[in-house]
Image (tube, rainbow, N blue to C red; front, side):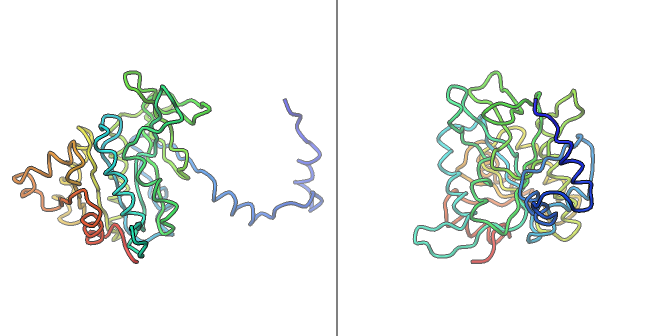
Length: 291
């Protein structure tokens, strides 16, 4: 065990006799660039927490939800199209609108148990893949701790997924995450993530932010989240837009092909899983901006 440097500690409490080093403002700037973790109980509500991510970006919050461990390989390529649209990529390299504002996602990454060097594609890879090209956006991962967390050489494990071919870690490129749990001994259910995201979206919409829920694939939990956004739209009479990507499979396809259900939910929009179609629709709904 390394010994404590009492002399150095005393010097830092002295009147400037410490060794030359980074000044406090420089250190604070360095600190802000490093990962931040918030731990929230399932029912906690904090306006200050939301404000941490609201100041520096355009007032639009974009939530992406959908397929993860249960999504089949046939639907992986379509996610790359969505990523390219959000980051403003085009084949001819002409400037395109790109994501600005606040992005909310699951904050995790899936790794194959047989080879943890390989990422299992899922919707939680979309926003992290856009971050480098979207300097006008901030990404916040909302992580539901459904299992005991423990450190491994591959990352901070939040779920071991005993019946699956993958395990789940906190996304390694994510700068800020909120970990949800009931208490130190009890994890959170899977729906805690989308409930917390809806709280954040609701708070921000009260401050005149725009909002969109984009759905790619998904299962029952995704369906429950869509139902919540539709219910909130009925209560508020505005906002709470939902975009279903048709051709992504799962819940998104099932609802996108249900004309009777769509007619009952005017806040729900449908777009084909094609680059130009998604670009125009996301621009119309405010999730991407500028050129």
